[in-house]
Image (tube, rainbow, N blue to C red; front, side):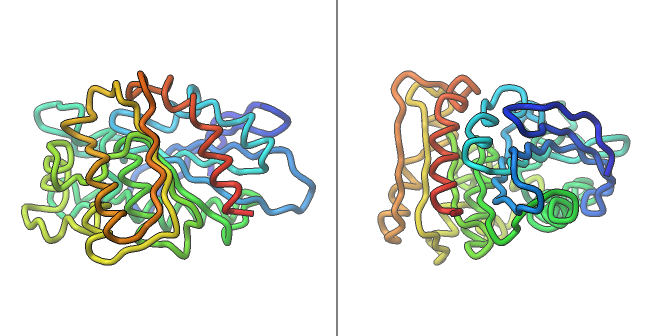
Length: 278
């Protein structure tokens, strides 16, 4: 693991790191904030998954999480959203919602993306092993959150591995990718046209198929330009109600899809995670 940069913040350390990923076959960059802590202490870990076009840097620069993490004693990890580098396939038309920066947190099975786009394994297996080895992390206390495409990733990973992630939350998540244009394009491109293969990467479908978590927290801006066509939180609300999953869905008046929205409610989410992580 290579240290790209470190800086002191709120008594802790904000770092950016790079390593050669076996999962993606590329170098991957990620950020980690470690709050102030006693020597030898092990701290709970909150994973943050970013949205379309983003890297680790978006939340690191604009997420305003460090003060809350320092107060609550939480390690905050932000991976990239896709593999990058020479030879990594991109959308042939250069679209922003597929390919580089848009890995959708799946392990692709379709060429040419299957060669590198293995973000599911990277986020759920490889990077956690690296965090456990290199940082003062208590891997028995992990939670996960994300924004937009990253909210989709957080929900699907949380629903798939409820014993790994103690708490799950999201900002403006894509809750049913199998029913919206972003998801249909991404899941079709990465996983093929068999929609049955999409269901394990669709939060609403996972709940319909029996996946359960103790509770979910979702914040959604009602001025989000993607709300009606791409996000559809009402589908998650209906699925949770049918399944008996307690969902706190907060529709935030006047807020859009940006980090101005995310940063406003970041501390709320981190406090919610900390209560469950102990």
